[in-house]
Image 1 (cartoon, rainbow, N blue to C red):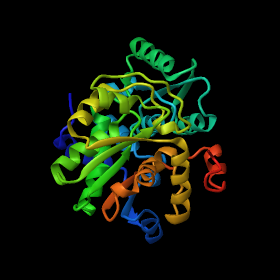
Image 2 (cartoon, helix red, strand yellow; image 1 turned 45 degrees about the vertical axis):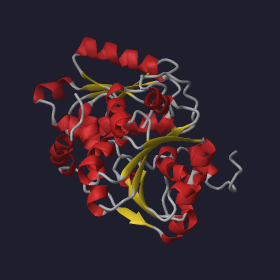
Image 3 (tube, rainbow, N blue to C red; image 1 turned 180 degrees about the vertical axis):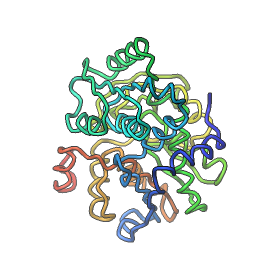
Image 4 (cartoon, helix red, strand yellow; image 1 turned 90 degrees about the vertical axis):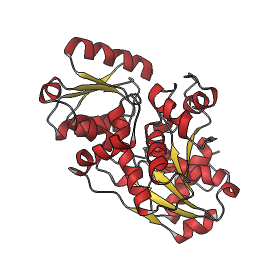
Length: 322
C-alpha cells in the first residue's frame, strides 16, 4: 500500500481529536543569517516533543477494539517509540517497545512514562526488531514498523498540510529523513497542494542508508554512525522509498557538525530548542545557502528531545564540536 492525499485527509480527525495544529513562525534574525525567508514548523511543541505522535494517533484510531486489546509492539531508539506509547495510552492499549540494550536511558524512561513496557535487548536495532517480531508472533500484538506502516505516514502528512495551508507559495520544504516517513508524506501533500514547491530531504553523512537507497533505487544498508538519534537508521524502508523516488526533488547529506551548528542557530536566532534531527533541515540550508537565497522555505523542526550531550554542546563556540 502506498500513501495518497486522501489518506492524509482521512487522518485529520484522528490527529485533531487529541492535538491542535502546531505553530509555524519566521524569525528576522534567522532570515538574515541565511539570506532567505524561513518558516520554522514547531513539531517540538508536541506532547512527546516530536512530530511522530501524529502517526501513532492515526494508527491507534484505526485499530479495532479487539486489536487494541492485543496491543502494539514496535522497535525504536527514540521518538517513534514515544509516539506509539503515547497513542496506546490515549486509547488504553498495551504497548511494548523493544530497544537496544544501550539505548539512551532518558528516552527509555520517557517511553515508560507513557505506560509502555520497555524491553532492552541486543546491540543494535536489527536485534530489537527481531525480538519485536517474535513478541508479535507469540502474543498477537500489532507489529508496528517505524517506516513501512502506511498509517504513520498518513498521520505525519497532516503537519505538511498545515504548512502549505498557512504558506501556499513556498519555494521549498526541507525535511529530515531517518526512515523517511515525514519527507515522503510531505512529497504527497505538496504534489496536491503546491506542485511547484520542492520537497528536499536531508540525512547525516555518517548514516546515509535512506539517501543511498534513494540514489540507487534499491534498499541499501549502510553503517549507522551518526550522533543524531532521529537520523540513525541503517537501512532504507520500502514504503517511504517508493514515494521518495517518485516525488522527492532532492536529497542531501550534511555532517553532524553542521547539524550542531544549526542547533545553536535555532537556539539563538529562533528561541528554539531542537534535537539534532529537528535542526537537520536548517543544516541543509547552512550547507548550501546559494540554493535558497531570496526564497521562501519551510524547515521542519521535527523534535525537541535533545539529550544531555546536545544540550552541553549548545554552549560551545561555533566550530568547537568539530
